[in-house]
Image 1 (cartoon, helix red, strand yellow):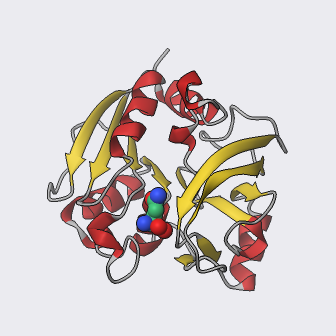
Image 2 (cartoon, protein in one colour):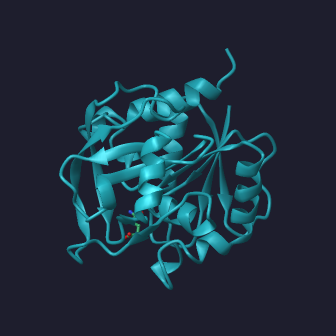
Image 3 (cartoon, helix red, strand yellow):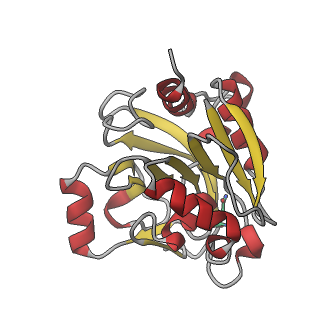
Length: 222
Ligand SMILES: NC(=O)CC[C@H](N)C(=O)O
């Protein structure tokens, strides 16, 4: 199966994401933000963490208006899969592919530490490798991770089982302790924690590996 990882000026988790995809069995192509098309036959697009365009304007806002993001929007509208991690989650909200917004952390400080998460749904290609309610530890590193959504949207995300991960001890003030959400068709996941930083024994924690194994495994023809 084929994965693409986007690269913006200021991305710093693009290679880590590519390694996580490759270790799970994907054929990965790196795609520069100025490209206007994704490689032929891409199954999943990875939008990595980092500081795209220096976080100017709003985190992810400039990246979301790059030529490659127009192609990503078309890919998702055709039913393609996308995974946005941290800055990638911010890009997905800025493109409108995921609802809500990521605002400054409640404590106004950059938070960089491992956090405990609860797996809130196993009903997605990204989370099917976990047990419902499983507690996993995944690192966060952000200053704008405070997920904001109006009450009716939070209720809808809950009703539609679209909250993928929740914080056990909320590090940033996110509404309803939300750490990651799914799109309506469940083919787009955005999350602030970095599973690619907890994906192999050398990381000292492999709790993120199940996400990549489940995703890549499900998209790989038998
Ligand atoms: N690690 C990241 O992707 C950080 C995202 C963004 N630059 C922030 O600090 O919120």
